[in-house]
Structures are given as structure tokens and as C-alpha cells.
Image (cartoon, rainbow, N blue to C red; front, side):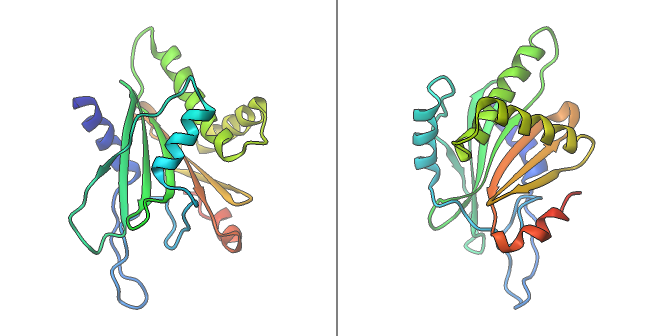
Length: 199
């Protein structure tokens, strides 16, 4: 439990709630730091995603996601998380009413010592599997190449976002504090705006 709380604290750096007012004066839902207002959701719930991901990745199994409840009816997004191992976690931003995924993330908390390289390699395998899940026509090499490219582009930035087709990839590299990789759906009409969203 201690490790889960540590991971959630780290995730808060990336998925911190930011409240604001919409143009009509309505409160806006809390969003991940990089999640765009009005961003769409994948047409899949978190439980269906987990079931399909586990079926497609027998060696990379996700445990059940646990919702992080917010007792505020104005909050339209829900966060959920699951522990993969001692230094690797998956989390998601969900539509509160449907539990459909608006953003799905894998977060790695680096460890020190001789196991670091092995732990990092495992984390990278999970992140590449996330690319493959949403791009089933990609080969393992294509996923690896894309992930390597995203990591390089996101180095020393609070986050880096890149859009390809109907998907948005986000890398939030916080150095020794951790690395988060996210996949989100986008509205194609917003693609030009997204290209200019990198921080």
C-alpha cells in the first residue's frame, strides 16, 4: 500500500487537478496537466481495456484498476490506478459516467542499484505494449522505434505530446522522480492545435 501511495503521489505531478471556468461560467472538470479540455474518450471502458490488454499480452498482465474517488459532483473525470510491480504503475483518466478512457498511462518510478537497468527494460516493454494495443498493425520494431523517438523528443521537457492520426502520445520525463507515458484519443479536427501544445 505504501508503494501505491508513493506512485499516486508521483502521478499527481503529472495528473494534477487544475480547476478553471469554462466560457459559459461552468466549472471545468479537473484534468491531467496535459489532457486537453473537451478531449474525447476511447470507446472502451477501463475494465474492457484491461481484459483485452491481458488477452493480447499474456506476459504483461494488468491487475484490476482501483478508482480514486473524489466526492465532488462537479468533477467529471475519475482517476483509477493499478500496481504492476514495486516501481511500475498504470493509471487512467476516465469519464465519470461511463468509465471510458480519456487518457491511459504507465508510470515508472526509477530504482537505484544493480536492478535499475532490468527494471527500466521491463517498464519500456509495458510502454511499447501500450503503443501496440492501440496500433495493432504496428510491428514490435515500429513500436520500439516510435517509443525511442518520443523519449528523445520529451527529454528535459515537463511533457512532450505528439499526435499521429487519431492518437496522441505523451511523455512526461521527470528524471529521477519518474517517467510517465500516456496514450489518448484526439479529435482529428484538433490535430493542428495539438502539434503546437508541447511544453
